[in-house]
Amino acid sequence: MSNSKFSNPARKALVFAIAVSALAACDVDIGKDGLTINKDDDVTYVPGTPSEPTESAECGGTRSGVNWGALLSENCPKLSDYNLFVDSADPTRNPNTGGIPYDLSTPLFTDYASKYRFVFIPEGEKATYSGHEAFDFPVGTVLVKTFAMPADTANRGENETIIETRLLIHRDNGWVARPYYWDSEADASLAIAGKSVENMTTQHNGQTLTFTYAVPKASSCTSCHSVVPLLQGSEDQRQPIFKPIGPKARYLNKDFDYEGYNRNQLAYWEEQGVLEGLPESMSEVSQAPLFSNAQDPALLAPEALHDAAKAYLDINCAHCHRSELTLPEPLYAGPAGSSGLQMEYNREYADDPTRFGACKIPVAGGSPDYPLGDVVPGAAEESYLLFRMNTTDPRHKMPELGRSVIHQEGVALIREWINQLPDAACSP
Image (tube, rainbow, N blue to C red):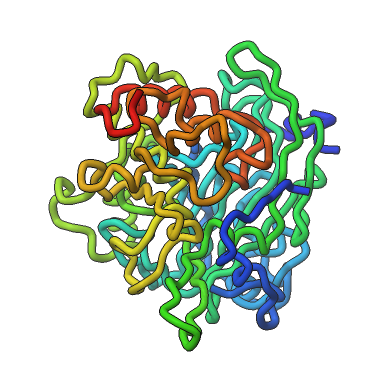
């Protein structure tokens, strides 16, 4: 990508409503980091020149490789201070040694932005496989995600405006989130307080979308990345736990083109010595379907439609709307898990349709126009869930954080899914 991507005048807040009171415990300052302590689209992979990095605790203190020392201890003012990429002005490709690109089969939606993901794991360390949860990454791991807005979503990778790069860093005292806003062609600046980017535009299916893109403030990351305790009384003093979301086996279990070497991502991570515990047979590994905006959900077979809808709801909603199940911490849930709406991919719909919203009256929010429940099987247009996905009204929209426009294809998928669900007590 050339620097022409910065020509869009849109380079020149974030509306966030907290629906569950448990989140109040997340948005606080703790320790020297000044933040709570508790990580979609093809890229080209060209490995960095192997070298022994010279660690330094000072920002920008090394240029021969990743600045691991600064990552572990410093909140550097510039993204380039960490030296994560061969070309510090291009965070979409060519990671320095220790970095591996990856993508997800079903990604979280963010205003039709392209996303470029990398995982950096210190030499000699490994992530531990989990069948259902995000992997257990060692201290020193950095999950990097860069967001770029294409001029036209039909031509991703061409004429894109780089907006932000988010880092999730696993430090000695837990995970921390560090957002960086690309305020120049050369580098990105730390944006602890977030940033509203007005007049962002993209063409999508021949339609011009113009909106305010929100770079979240660092402390807002806890709203999605934390699981919270299901408190058992006044003496229960357990705290929220910050966790990565995307790098789960089911979303990584797909092929990736590593500069001409097409390989399953999980197998590649194991080959590179950064993943342990992967089952011997890939048939034992869960696999979420590939989501594409070009897919017409009306053409999917019923089983494939159900699977696609569950994966979409999981990646976009279940970081908040989940409770216990396979969480390794007993009596923990997502921040909205106590609402009764629990939409994990590995939860069976047939076991309790109410957990997926069927005939469930909303606990938070709600609208008199949707009295029958979050999901009304066979009647998508009467379902409050679909309404929340299909609005930008901050009083109702879901997800609350991370989007300013409606994901038209996501709405179409969930509409088709609801309409094909078997009738329930609330169905008209």
